Image (cartoon, rainbow, N blue to C red; front, side, top):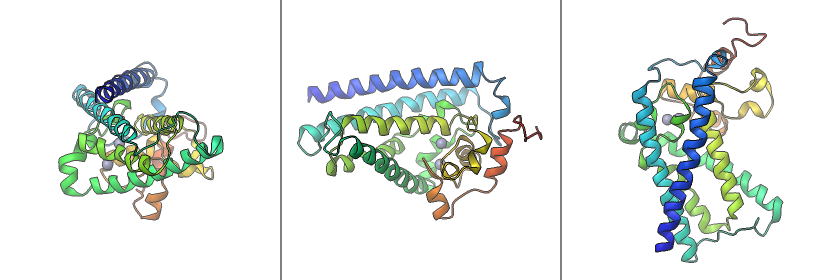
Length: 260
Ligand SMILES: [Zn+2]
Ligand SMILES: [Zn+2]
């Protein structure tokens, strides 16, 4: 029990230090020091502009999400201690290829899980009580990326528990999947479109999530529910119109986009 508590506190403190260090630095680089140079890359926003009250709300709810992350570490640690989950230190029985396939499978599985949970969170009852916390931010910025209600934070991470029960999860795989999720979340809420203008013309790449794509979701409070890709939105008919135009608007200072 004492070991689990230590794991929880260590996970919370470690994740908090990493989160506020990395997110704070990226926020300063883009929203403060780089704001002038990146002005042409601002994603188009319609609605309430970023202000101090939004930032305080986001910081408060980021701590809530980090506490839930500590809880998840306890749950996984408890399952391992009880012999239900196998969290190995190496790359697992399949070696490097097995680990790489597991990472791809987990990322795609997480994408589908998120799509389902996110659509459910947009039903009126859950939106009003849970998801409105995240959608209070219309003009998204790096600090929006962890700004969730505790129930939503738990739902978004809970998928790892059943996975850990059926799959041997090597620690490097788990770390990499969480790192990819964190980077993707940060990119989606950057408020600046740093991907090049040709991204939407590139086969394969055009189906990934972008800062513009997710910002449209925050501006309109509907559609574009995906996490890593646009695949599920395309398949289930929930893509928002105007994505290509918004993406072009976020490249208005680039050669070939002289309209801004
Ligand atoms: Zn939403
Ligand atoms: Zn969001």
